[in-house]
Amino acid sequence: MKPKILLTNDDGVTSEGIWAAYDALSTFADVTVVAPSTQQSAVGRSISIFEPIRAGKVYINDTEAYSVGGKPTDSVIIGLYALKLKPDLVVSGINIGENLSFESIMTSGTIGAALEAANHGIPSVALSLQVEDQGEKFDDPGYSKLDFGDAKIATADICKKLLLNGFPEKTDVVNVNFPKRYTGKYEITNLAEKLFETGVEKRLDPRGRPYFWINGPLLEDAPKGTDVHAISKGNISITPITLDSTAYSGLDGIKSVLEL
Image 1 (cartoon, rainbow, N blue to C red):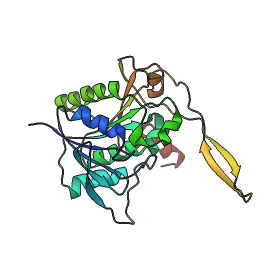
Image 2 (image 1 turned 45 degrees about the vertical axis):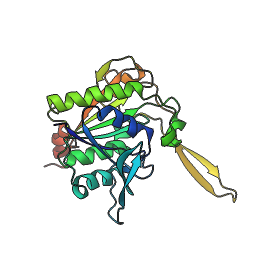
Image 3 (image 1 turned 135 degrees about the vertical axis):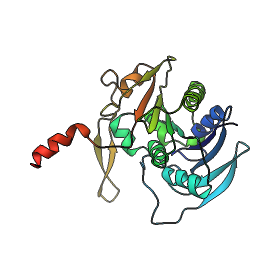
Image 4 (image 1 turned 180 degrees about the horizontal axis):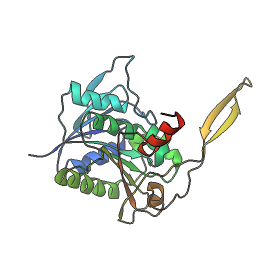
């Protein structure tokens, strides 16, 4: 029997990225798409607990999918507990835009969906494709200019191997980032500290009242061995991530500070 995959994302059910992933994964697996109805980037692992969630069938590219009026995490929960899917793997992506460093994985809806699946005991993979122009993240994801060709090949390769060989120990999410210009090499990486140089731009509205845009340029590189460095070389970055955020190396230090 074919393995079963629940496929979700944070760019929305109409995104070209999720359907590129579907094309790659459906060659060897039974894939069910359960994804947000609208763009939900940068919502992290937030969950809709103060309002009802609507979910219904839609047909995209002649394929049945489920459109969820909520967050990426909601989509995973609806897939597992309302639709009662029993996937062997949850895949989130392919996201339009890279998800690299401590900074991004804490805010990314793509990673948030994968972490939610892992929290319910399902091995999960997050997939993201670097963009040439950061403005592309804000365009309609259903009409992307990105070339998903190499990412589709690597998606199938990586997910096949994870299903065949089993998920790595002490890993909850495998975070995969595809570079915009691909060398053909995989690199196992750790998270860089930052991806952006954070800034704030102040503007005035027509009435002279201030408002603000959070912005800042991308960092061009990071130390060797990090995901940011791998992508800068054109390599596919593969980073194992864990749900456990405990700072084990800090346990003795906090005992000392609190005199315990």
